[in-house]
Image (cartoon, rainbow, N blue to C red; front, side):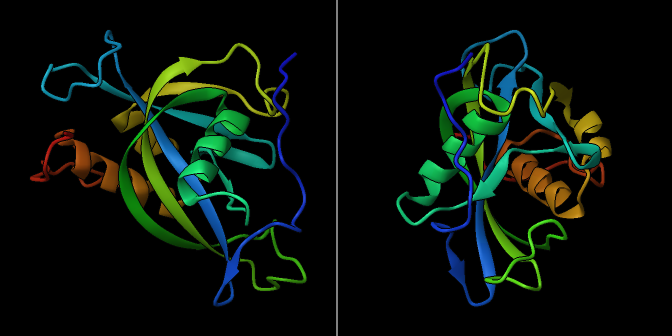
Length: 181
């Protein structure tokens, strides 16, 4: 079993202007390559995880706590929920959503604001804190658009595609965005 332990509770959670602040990642790799090189012509795959609370797949994300930077929170959530480590490559943006499962005394409306990053995966852990509750799956970009449980995660995936010139967006249009450096 893993020595890693998932953080729990809400005492250290960050809240701002009525929103619970969340951090997460779109974990990715280039199939057939351990090099982060968008010029190599390799196929991009993203890692998605199952939810213990229903159908559809998710990207790892969770509460941003007071004792960490947003980048540290995103990396921690990727380890806890998906069992992957890697390098943050791009900030994809902030995405607002309403959580039905995370309404509490600090946030009765369940409003959340997620800071999402692209994470180039360098290591898949054999055991991780939430592996009993989540399965992880590597998917093509088209598969991942169809599997996203939430519309805001499809928006984050759209931004990922634009940042990485994947040649595909949710609408099937070619992207004109800059490449990874």
